[in-house]
Length: 72
Image 1 (cartoon, rainbow, N blue to C red):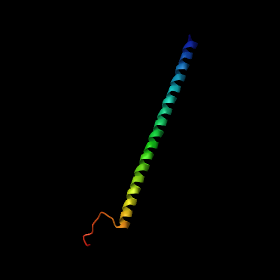
Image 2 (cartoon, rainbow, N blue to C red):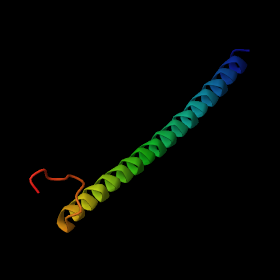
Image 3 (tube, one colour):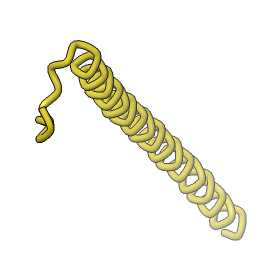
Image 4 (cartoon, helix red, strand yellow):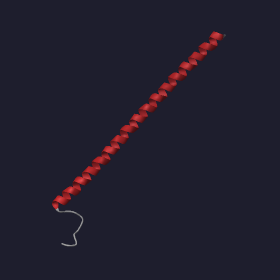
């Protein structure tokens, strides 16, 4: 009886450890995916800001700026 109880206990322990490992792996994968999405979003925002700055610089160079001088 003692051997059966210990065997069942060891099987239950093995299953619980295995299931926790899968959960941890899934959480890690989700975290990596979220980090990738955050990096992608930040890169897009940076690209948009760079493009906007380049457009403003081009407007200044071309003399097409939105600000009108009162002296002119």
